[in-house]
Length: 628
Image (cartoon, rainbow, N blue to C red; front, top):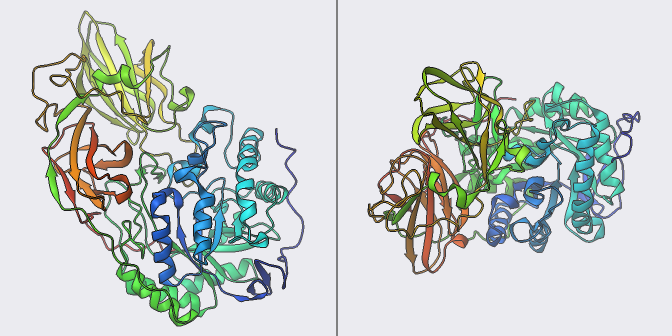
């Protein structure tokens, strides 16, 4: 267990001063790098949103834009997906990412959270934290602090040897993230700060909060450099930061030049010239700036986060292109060129050449070769839990994906209203294999009318975790069913529950003579047609042969909602609500020769899958970033 939480620090807000130490230090209103005057011109890039084979390429592109630093969050949930099981290999090798940046002469700013927001699933926190109903997030609560301490005990030895004072590129580390947008427990921030110091962090520490009085008051930490996050009105934003920190360098830890998208909303864009003007104003004011995002990347798999307005749940799309200067597939956009000009004007000529564009796959259309219904594959994909009432994913050791609930209803009932308490986020409801409709968390009073014959009926609910909330006060976002299922006012008991993270699809059997019917038995229909099983949750298998790998985009015109895997890798979700219409399929995921694509369509399949060379992120609404 952690030690007793300290009392809030009572020291004055003056900042630490050093003028000769290695690394990044503060003197007055300026940064020094190894004792010389320095301005941070940084770009945000998240290693966990990029295939590791592309880390070098994306970093080269950001360096060519003129930055001297890159910044990355660290997503706890990709490194500790289960309690005590840590992963720092391959796509999770954050030390390799940082070392790659160092090899290009770039400094690195690290933001280890433990909470990061980032429009990432649960703000980077692991879903298994929610298995303990007594744990309280982001505060000095013993259970939460014990989990954070155990995580930092593993993470910090990975990071501390990479600090600038030890010859590495890490010049600054953030304490938590935008805490003033959540709470004002200064003692919690200081507990995290002391934990960093105790584990060997000796580089510059800072906090980051929105450029409004309430945010800065809640998230500031005496003796630690404060920074601001905002996207517009730079003069007012910097004035707010200076009001709360009269002395110290002006540091914009997130300049939001773009924005992210939610399913069912319009695609966000921002005029490149206007965004460049704001960057120019910030640099002209003498501020150091981290451009958020420099390269956005992709919310691969089930890892997109979600927002909540208080009345509406808003899941984030798969693409995290963010309107960034380096696009999701590495494109050098118009914003890249405008930012490059602005940075050169303030920092001097850029000696680095522009990397060439990447090759793209030749467009083509594919038809499914086989299809297998999910219902007939449940026993192949999951172990059943037999419990009295529905339980949420976290109670069964699951964080991501789908979860299937099944019970037997007693009859006869001429008419009853089916409702679900504590639904998160979206349930397809079936009676004897026939879909009755869909229930969603935004409509808790909504129900479905059904009748049960004298012999009884089998009720099934397939629930999707569409992304845990990553920002604001509603973070405790358990998935699946956390209340109960009622017929009228009567709770139904006796459930068979199957967690479906779908992390391994190899048990699926596409080799039968025909697609399985609702009970899993083979039928005589041909599996060569794309619509062999066209209605209901069904896996569809495609193959495509390539002469060589290259970047591509996959579209599903006429399809409804689901998830797509490329050669076993969960590429991401699609939904006909838009705005996103294509999924980025980067070259490292393709193979020379035969490639397998599996699509889990939850409703009605289209006729074809389209492989294209052009992204379609949706109709733009011209919306810039929020005005704070």
